Length: 273
Image (cartoon, rainbow, N blue to C red; front, side, top):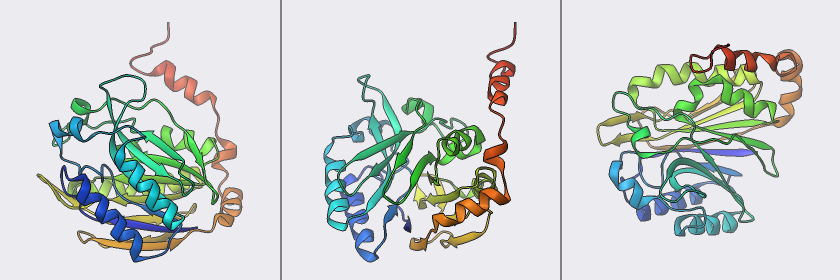
């Protein structure tokens, strides 16, 4: 499957312009998957405007992207503020997967950074579901930015059969070193292809470093976008590499599920009696 990693700067609170940008980049090259960064539809630093920019899964922006996916017979992944489907008034930081047949999946970010320049818990509700999504090319698991710091999430997705983990991000230059350490680690410890797509340029007071990249299951770097520059890079992923990688590094076979019960019990919020 051919992945197109699109590192560009979205305009803050300008969905119309950002949709136009998405359509423009999708026309630039042929791919099976086109992947944009975290909150690309709205821009990252919208703060109180997020509630006005949020939409439901059947909202007008996703309808437009469904049309683009159908016309190009491709999958499109991007970030947006999404209204909760059950509780009126709650907004999620979501990753959206639009299929060429019009099907739409979403993943709501679990871990919301609220420290330093980040204020996500002020505006968003935490996600609660961890699903793997079937495509005609393979099984996809989605993550958003800070989620990659928590190996339990990627392990949960890989144990559900994910072939490819895709993390969309809005990472500033101050965290570049950390992400570039974690991306190959998550690939190896789960023997999956790890795809990372970051925004680039400025978002209010943040400078985002771009550098979108893909690692194979044995931490070979397959492609990397330039730093601090808008770009689109493509890469063909061969899922046939998964079986020999999992024979070489048997981490999925050797995981002991009881450790997760132990983690629950020793957590500072859930002590043993």
